[in-house]
Length: 279
View 1 (cartoon, one colour):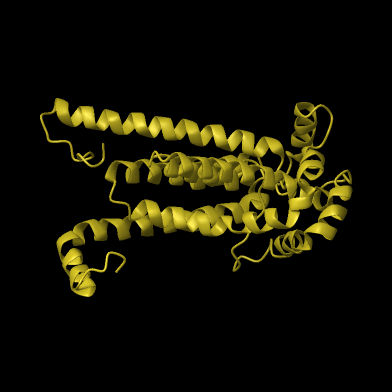
View 2 (cartoon, helix red, strand yellow):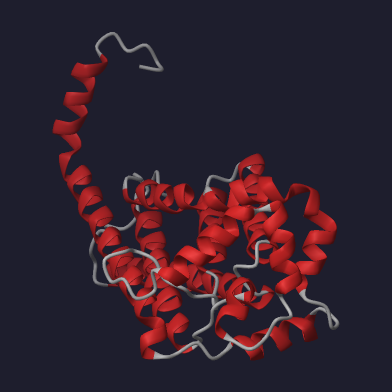
């Protein structure tokens, strides 16, 4: 339609007939990601019942050590307090980026990158959001006062109540629905899945090798990291753990797929993971 094709519907039907195996593979891949996301949601919901929240006191002190005795949220509000509401909008829009990235990956025609980033998404949801979050069971600054005898974040809550009351409302709703197995929710701070997905999105965009897009992608990832601290959902260390791990898995997945290609060549087979357009 954008190219003003004389028969766009007919062409679309022809494309589907010609490429239906690729489309079927894309749908199957997307459904697998959806199943993984559902599993992640269930694991996250079960965290406090398997390993009760315990790590927050350590993470609080670690943040203060790294930021010279200051809670990181005080720094973000001093620098970006004027932009609190836009940060809320950007942070909430992460859900569209989250699902959109999965769709984009699944229906991409770049088969090698499709496999690579599927592995990354599976790692983020199951390993980071599932296993690691379970082992490092924590609630985040905005909920510390609800689960621990620590009122040091009350000033942050007062600021958020004035500048971003929706955050307080969501916090209370998450706590109120902890015991309801029918609702998709859950509480987890370490590591930050918001930051992990934002970094994955930046890496995905970076592969197009367009400087403007790359800048937008990494600016977005930085904004999500700042927002995670600014709104009290995460400690600064939550993102400092998840981002390097995503980069590590991105690198390892690339090496793994390169090894598979080399193995195919060694066995005298035509590599099926790459094509001229992939390179």
